[in-house]
Length: 343
Ligand code: KG4
Ligand code: ZN
Image 1 (cartoon, protein in one colour):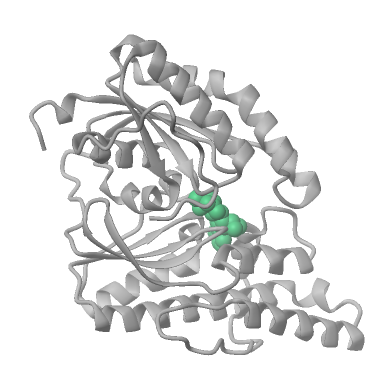
Image 2: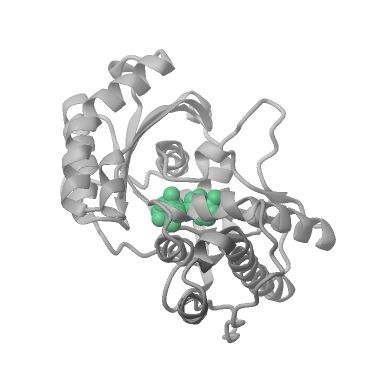
């Protein structure tokens, strides 16, 4: 770390999907992390891109203002500005990127374009307290969000290799789609998780997904749930009402079993110093418990970010930007949002 890095003050902006967020960091310490969730999508059962970008437009100035105020930082103190460049929704990314560009131009400070999926993993390197020990490298991270399911090997900060990923739906989508057919409101993942806590995970058995190296596929599992419900409802129209919590528990177990069985294979193939979970689905209670148990069984230190850093947030963009800033990985003002950004 160069001498000034721990004193650098970064403003970070996240607007890739339906959360408008701004954070201020001093070095790798988060001073503020403000997240405005857009309730407007609830009535449509999913994110409506056009409404998301409009909501970002009205949220962005007050959210940035609140993040600076909470951090006790003036806009003139900023060393650099980090912003999500992709992946995400074009109209949503545009709002954050345009705002960050304008601010960087006005303040004459560097602009840093951040990959949202890398940032979910970088959230593990936020220093949460003086005594906090950041994970040792190499690290194996299971990133599970609404759009991605990936096993990522991190050799160096920002040096990441995807060693497995889903060939169809993401784990978050598998939860959200189940919630929809079970008549639960959007976003469904947390609802399925909450109901599953009081259900019996062994009551129903769903088709085990076919193994495909370190890759995932969730479409078979989802179809298995759909056919199962269709058949049961034919026999008893009140089936979902009566058995909802047990269906949630059994389906959640099937997803978590599958996520961790493939992760276990990856651990055998790649000796690592730490294990990590990232992305919105890492808020899932069963996944958290079983992931920590796996780490204990394999005697590898395991890390899950604090809840506020699991789902979309700007603090994770800030920590990624801080590492990029030190390497002078700066963007110029011709930078554009990249909805399908890869690394
Ligand atoms: O990372 P994230 O906040 O946004 C994306 O970049 O996609 O992940 C959102 C996903 C949604 O599918 C949501 O239903 C799921 O994470 N999720 C959960 C839980 N909390 C959020 N899925 C299962 N159990 C949860 N507790
Ligand atoms: Zn995300």
